[in-house]
Structure formats: C-alpha cells, structure tokens
Length: 299
Ligand code: ADP
Image (cartoon, rainbow, N blue to C red; front, side):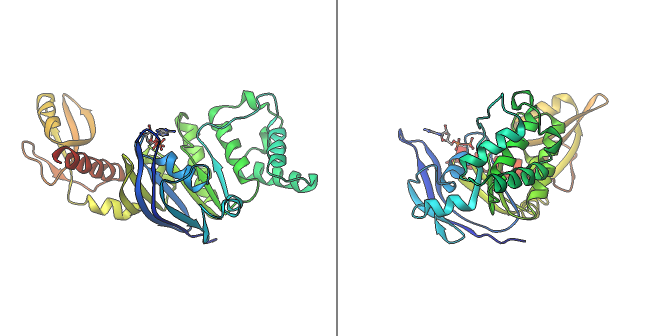
C-alpha cells in the first residue's frame, strides 16, 4: 500500500463577495479511500480545488507528500489526478482517441508511452470493450469511468474526484463505487459525495462538512459509535408520526399495514413505545447534522 500523507492546516476560503465556503480546516489524510461527505454547498468542491492547486486559499495551507500546495504547485500537480464534477469530453472522438488526446495534453509526447498508458487506464476503468465507442454515445456511468481513466493517465499517487456518482442511476452508481474501492488499494483517493451509501461502500475514513465547517473526522465505525444508544425504532399511527416529526430527527419511515415504522435519532423518545436499535451510518450522519442544526438554531 502506498502511503501518501496529506496535512491540511488552517486551510480556509472566503470568496469575493464574502461567502465563507470553508472555515479554517485541519486534517490529516493518509492511505486508502477518504470521503468528503456533506450536502450541496458545504464546501467540498472548494476544498478539493484548493488541494488540486486550482484555487488560491484565503488562509492556511496543505502539504501533499511534503509539498506545499501554495509553494510547489508544479510538484503537487505531478502527484495528483483531479476529476471535477463537470469535465469536458469531445463527443466525436472514440474512447481511445479521447484518452490519447488527454495523454498528449499531459505532456506524454512519446507515442509508445502514451499508448501503454491508455491501455493501462482502459483496463483499470473497465473501458477496454468500449474503446471504439464515440464519447458522445456513452451513458453517464461510462462517461464517469472515462473521466476516472483520464485522471489515472499519469499514474498519480493521489486521485481527487468530485461527486463521481451524482446524477447516475443506481446500477451505474454501484459500478463506480466498486471501481473506486478497487483503485483505492494502490493510491490515495479523495472522493466527495452527498450520498451516505457511497461512503459506506467505498471509504476507509471520512470528513463531514456542513456550511464550510468540519463536523467530524474519523472512520465509519467511530462515526456510528457516536450514535450508539441514540437510535430508536417505533411503530406509530400516522397522526402520531406527524406529532413526533415536529420534535425529532427521523432517519427512516416505512409503512407497515395501516401504521408507520419510524426510525429516530435522539437521546430518548417520549410519546412512543420506542426500541433502541443498532445505528447505521445513515442514522449517525443525520444525527450529527441534526445536532449541528439545533446548535445553530439555539445560538
Ligand atoms: P459543495 O461542493 O459542497 O457543493 P462548494 O464548495 O461548491 O460546495 O460551495 C461552497 C459555498 O461556496 C456555497 O455557498 C457556494 O455557493 C459558494 N461558492 C462556490 N463557488 C463560488 C464562487 N466562485 N464565488 C462565490 N461563491 C462560491
């Protein structure tokens, strides 16, 4: 396993106009798949673009493998592959032509080296059978795999991928998750998402962001442990459900006959015969978000 160390110290971004997209952040990341989880607008893209040296921080910095993102831009870029959420492709090129062209843009001038790299990344992203397909005819999931293949061309030790599962149908989403989990064995992957199940399927550790603020950093197990003793299930009438909804954070609601089976995260539940249950990652995420929201409302 390649160990690449990322150290983030006091990194922040305030956009012109005053939006504080990322509050000063401290973070250490080493090997495996590391997820940035948070709702839209929580600062994930801002953070990733700063790490990829595409956006100037307002304060603080980060080092990747000892290289400072503010001083050694060139060296840092050599270490990483970045895939933004919206990336341009040339619809009339075939998959292999697109990759070859991106190889050229990445300064792989020797044709043999470029060809070998294209073959390798098509293999890695399961695109070999699609090599002759025009890029414009690819599905969302195939496009995303092509984007990941492009980012892998230079064999970076660090892959930064922004919301790779956004807008994909469930089957394609599962395929992308599988690919990331596989690729994470040989390099560090930093992946953003607003979907909890993406994290569960791929990540070794995660950071939760809300309105530019870090709410949690650690492993999935550590996050779930925080909600142990705070997850409940109850079967209630529809009327009761509406009353409880006013007071509690619901993490699931299912119909069961004429009644409703609900899941709640809270210290305790009054007004329903609730049983304590084993928390899921989804429970833990909604719990930490709910606590942050009620703290913000009380302040
Ligand atoms: P996420 O990736 O989690 O959706 P972003 O990093 O894109 O979050 O955005 C964080 C916040 O910064 C949002 O409030 C967004 O509107 C704001 N923002 C993003 N880019 C810009 C920009 N170029 N100028 C001003 N505000 C921006």
